[in-house]
Length: 194
Image 1 (cartoon, one colour):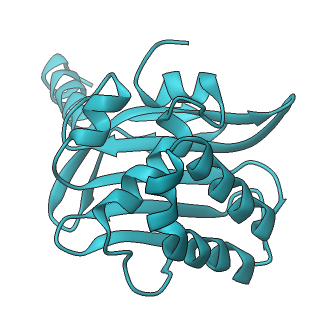
Image 2 (cartoon, rainbow, N blue to C red):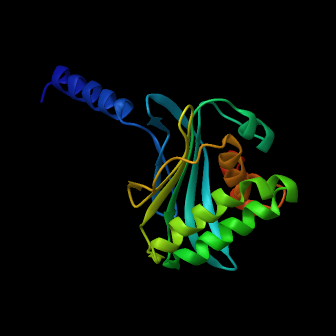
Image 3 (spheres, rainbow, N blue to C red):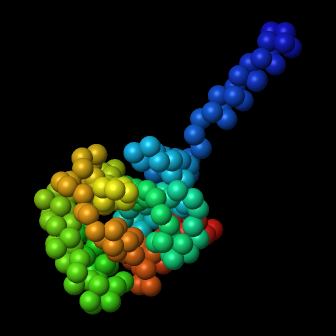
């Protein structure tokens, strides 16, 4: 192989490597650096693992239109947003729905929470209907401007979007609120180094 051929092969390999999307791997789960949500380009803000005691429960990645390092920045940021979650162990889905409901309630004042009760009950029902989530199963929670909050479980959108803009932020507060599900995961989703 002559030096020109070697040079061309090296250049081609470099171009292919630089064209491939970068990714972050958390507990074996790959999160791409960018994703698209109905035409909006989103950046991976951060990714981490939810622990319950010593057990890994799921890996989560937060995608935003631009980077945000505080809960206030993330919650007030306009545009599409997505939280991708991949289960790392089997869990009873109805239990997960209850934990999410509790997480919303723990991170809001009672009056604001009372306005969201119909949505919270519907979200709990979505997870109850699935019985269980196994390791490798995924779900996403997306904010789609003009449509609402879309919950997708195992690749299937679950009914009509939740119209209230406050509902998406209430869900995000499970992870980013003053009483987050997991403090280390909160820091990771906000892009802070471990």
